[in-house]
Image (cartoon, rainbow, N blue to C red):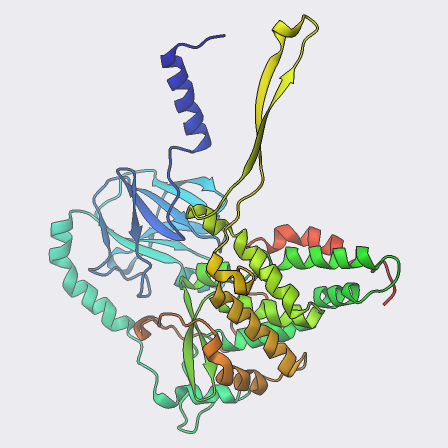
Length: 444
């Protein structure tokens, strides 16, 4: 059958629409207004509750098309609210899945001029307080003329007093959290010191950790099979978005690429992937992997990281060929089929050869975790963790500080172990359990 050129283009257009190829991907996690085929970011709100400021985006469409890429909470809880006159009025919307982590949001009816916030509500309220993107709807010139007085009043209500110099002393006493001046330290949403220490202690005694250690140390004729199970179980726990890959939840929940770790006498801001890299090194040594094996695994993860492919940095080799399919009617009826087999995508930076092709900054963080375990072993106290961090924190990648005006006080111990488990933890759990939670082949 031969299609006319117009039919070919029509068919191609339909296929593109069905596959979503005509819609570009959102640049990164966050909320966006789609205008004339371009994504305009809606800044994450820095005031609460639902305060729209004079610096927020102004949208002048009756039914704006919005996109939200946010892999943290159930997106069915997503709503747009009108926050004028301190009232929350939910706007009826159509929600369409663009992919597993991205929603397209379209109001069902024209939106009146006013202040709006895109929020994700949940029973703990932490999502509602953190996950919000606010904008104004209406004529830009009119809105800018009226906004200053209202915005200033709202900002004054939401100011947080900066902490006194002594506020962070209490972290050397994790039981009391009291400093000599009598001040209570400001435990804010970016401070992951106590969560991370508790996460390490929780998982160093986890059943998965015990089983991997047991399988790696097994002896006998079935030892290779045991070690294979341990290796695959480990991979499904630490790979991108898996249970022990914390960066996606940290970024998604806190809307940040920087976090705080307290050390003796102060604190520093660190890049948000540091907890996962340190954890990988510490728990990896605890289960019995050698430092070389851990660095080799981290290097492989870097080489195959999908982020490099998205940035066009990877080499993606393919094996292509042609297969001739014959016919009983003779050679003249033979049909040639061309095929291509993808061999995956890989990124090799020659400058990283000495770190097993891992990013040198990530390599240092993994090494930090390895040394943390070798120095303190399983029964590490909080004080030992603080001391090691104080002496070795230069190994870790620093992050950009967040303005104290957006710090929010949270209860001590709010982030429990497993709070920042990767978004694919539940999906991978059946595989991990099948590999690790039935008795080892060989005896202990």
